[in-house]
Amino acid sequence: MEWTHRLAGLACAGLLLSPVSALAGPKVVSGPGADPGCFKPWSSQTKIFQWDKKPGPYKIALVNGFVGNTWRIQMVKTAKAFAEQPGIKENIKEFKVVSTGTDVAAQLGAMEDFINQGFDGIVTIAVAPDGFDRIIRLADKNNVVVVPFDNILDTDKVMMVNEDQKEMGRMSAKWIMDESGKKSGDILEVRGLPGNSVDRDRHIGFREVMEAPGNSFKITEVVGNWDTGTSQKVTADALAVHGHFDGVFTQGGSDGTVQAMMSAKHPFVPMSGEGENEFRKQIADHAKDGLKGMSYGQSPALVAIAMKAAISALQGNPMPQLISIPIPVATYKDLKPGTNYWPDLNANFFAPNQFTPCGVNFTAPEIMSQSEKNTQ
Image (cartoon, rainbow, N blue to C red; front, side, top):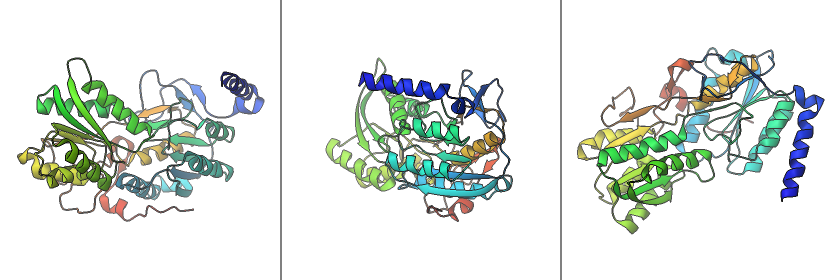
């Protein structure tokens, strides 16, 4: 195994020294990057990339993986809606969408196919946080801008867009502790889709606070896949086995978790969950009954910022390697109808869809009028 790693390292070194690859991909340049109000560097140490300018309009592809939950469906619809908005539409010659499922090889194959078709930019939610090195090298060789977002990669070789997932886990743990006033007790953690960096990082952040010295929580983990129906089932199963929880952290399918607790006649407890409109409606309806809820938002509109970042990079603008997006949060203390949740809308969707500094501003009808189907 060690010998294999050495051979791989030598092969990579050879590629880096070759005349073709030396000129390919982005250059690391001095900051600041373009439009820092929108494309905020993750930290002061974040590198600034710059690609050679390409004439537009551009061929852009969205290579999604899993599409089996509300968030992913809304994300695909948001991408299609954004591609039609003024200021973006004139910069896009062709826009394609494909969802490949949970298989890494299928996602890599789709990305390679778009590169070979001459696409200029690819935005993607990575099925796994690693295994993309070959595709990144191929994209660099062909001057294709690849932008992972949401589930990002464990590398600094590609431009990425995300919110701070570990911080979401940390703030959720702090919320449960602050609202319950406890440093011990039984906690339910409803995790997301296994194998993704988002699920991993939120879990790490949550445990970092809950398992800090001085705390003695007993945490029960279940896998909800960020899906309402799955979260409801696994929460119901956990309640049947354990009987009672003092707090709940759910990564998604939050409304399903609440519904399972209501069906089991479990008393409401402090709970941190995602930005689903249905979850926010539940908080607003039952806060007086004890549902002290916090709803953080990993917005499906991240795809729009990733698309905008890809276009900006193709236009030759300097860009942060890792772009930080603020975490939108609403709690039972500050929910406002028509502002951060919509009580009259029955269709489930994720409420946070506005990033004013980036010019990203969607209405629910704009998004819902689109289809989540592939466009190939």
